[in-house]
Image (cartoon, rainbow, N blue to C red; front, side, top):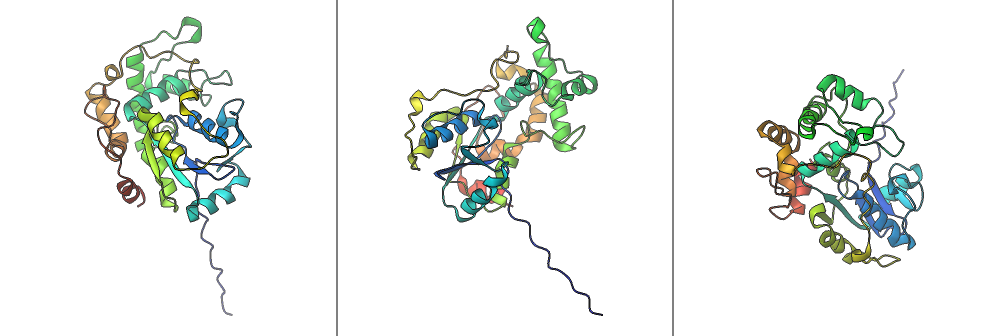
Length: 284
């Protein structure tokens, strides 16, 4: 009796975190904490002539998103053939993880609860992290708690314990690489710190049903106002050990996206992003 073997089908390429306008004018790979709310609203407006009423992350129509089943076919087809201009946006790793801490760990989310339910109690128990309370004006030692949070973030990224790394503090290079590894190619990667300049380059490279004037577009910071304000300059949160942890987690981000690791006070890039280098190093 002759055995027969079915040829296993190769899985289709996956493009998590990818958004595309319904007009297919542009494709965007979302990187959390890198102006994604504002970018998403600009894309939505460019198709519909109005902003989405609410947090753009909650939109289930009016834009293609990889998380929506009906969008996966159009996105896969577009990316495979590079039909549209594709871009993403990055941010200084020091300010990005600080933003993640104040928003996702200290802040009360839109549902009135802490992020991911039992995450904050877990961090309080295992790492001694304090986050204060809205009832007392979020009074706590921000620097001490943030540095303890960095230990947790490092543990989650390096050893995947006590949980898998969260998208808001996992490395930008990891997010951006999934698009390349599965066959996509970026036409532009720009910095949050030079947002108008970079976003204008994108708009200049595409045609949209509705014109966008970046000077009149509001900034959609969905995390603002539900947590404590940062009380100190960025550099005060990072001592030698903190900088070591940051480099361990984000070495590739600093190198590829040209940020200054040596000086946490300098949020601006110190070189130009080389797209060929990005595709070569993140496409492996």
